[in-house]
Structure formats: structure tokens, C-alpha cells
Image (cartoon, rainbow, N blue to C red):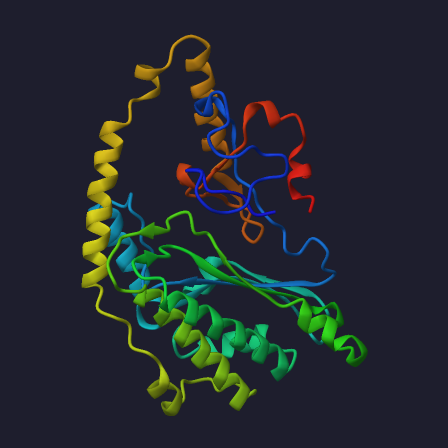
Length: 323
């Protein structure tokens, strides 16, 4: 189930959730981050995580962090293509063994090697590529209409179940399993203005170029063909979104100064509750990489969490996913 926004506007409500504003004490309502597991019913789940945008941005990034992100983008394909591979799981067609690649591997993929790398994932025929291309085209058309909205730091997740990919009798079932999802959008911002997110659109357009090249030449060349290079979309100037990010940073500072600290606003049980919530948020920001075993830190934005009224909190989180 999708959920309503924390500010009470738009979206659907959780099962049994009251209309916004009906809670007796909204400040005491627990918050949950609700995730969907696309691969839970798949026998051979395949995932491709594409980090979209010419660089990672967020309103809370100071000047030092922004410089680091610009350097990181310049040392991957993000700055040149508007996207980079952030992770991949697929299956060998020869041995059937699962193959996993993490974000550090993805950062080393070059512009010249991108077509060859994507060919490792899209090994199940042109109809699979056509389905993903169609979904990318629809997404691009939608994003072009979203003026002033920025999908900073987000990714596109391509998913399918390869279990039936090589069975002609179940080919339609395989193609129906294909999903394209926007994920990791906690840094989404409404910056205003009349411009769509050109850095995001650059990434979508160039991903389409590479997939179209795979349709035309399934045997990916080891170097970038000149005709393909000519079709790539040039990244937009970063000046516009640099200015937007600076304004967002200044607004973030103002909100931070206006927001009282836990110690100044809480007392007694309320203070303990506030500290407990902060500790839980910090713990949830840590995860273990399945590829490397390293402890990673996830960036969580508090305004992306979902609030559930306390009096309706007796059911388990599993109940939230029931249709």
C-alpha cells in the first residue's frame, strides 16, 4: 500500500489510518519507513540500480560535501552521462550462478565500457530491452512535466524474474515481471521555477541511448562506437542546480536554527521518548553490504518517514502491506 505524506497532503492512507488531523496528539505518533520487497516472490530476481543525475545532491550538503560529490561524479560516468551503475545482480546463462556487483565496482565502469556492462544484465532478448525502453520513455515524458521538482540522489531500479526468461511457454509471464521504480528519493526537493530536472532527464536519455545500441548490436563492442557517442546527450551546465542547491542549503540552515533541540523542548518521559526515537533513527541508518560485508551508512531524511497514529499502532508492520 502507498501512504499519505507526513504533512497530510495527498497519497493514500495506511489501512485503518485516520484522516490527517484526527490524531489527538500528532507529535506523539510513531513514524515508520515502509519498504517494498520487489523480489520477494521471484525465484531468480535480477536487479540493476542506476544512480541518476550528473552528481548527487541534497539540501543538507554543505560546500565541502558538495565539492566531494562533484569530484565523485567526475570519477564515474555520472558527470558525463547523467547516470552510473550503483549495483547489479544477475544470473549467468551458462552456469546459472548468481552474480553480484556492488557500487564500488559500478563506479569503475567507464563511458566506453558502459554498453558492454549493460549487456551483462540484459541477456534475455530484445523484447526485455524494449519493455524497459518503453518504461523509460514514459518516465521521461512525466518528468518533463514536473517543473521545479528535483530528484536529487535518487536511483532507478530495473527488476525482473529470470526464472522463466528462457521458457517460450512462459515468456509473457517473464515480461510481466519487469519493473522500473524510482528509489532512494529521500533528498527529493521542490525548488520552484519553470525548469524540469535536466540533470535527471540527461541520465534517462543516455540510458535509453545505450539500451537502443544493445538492440542494434547485441554483441557489445569493447570501445564506444563513434555513432553511439554522437547520440549521447550532453550534460547540462551545473550552474542552475548549483544555485538551487545553495538556496536549499540556506533554507535547511534556517529550519535547523528554528527547530529546538530535544533537550530544550522535552522533559521527563518526553525526553526519553525523543532520545529513543533519535537512537532508533541512527540505528536504522546502518546496514551491511551484501557484496562486501562492510557496514554502510544510509542517509535518512526525517520528512520522508511515515507517521501512524498511536492508537492505531497495535497491528504488526506486516499488516501494513496487506492489500
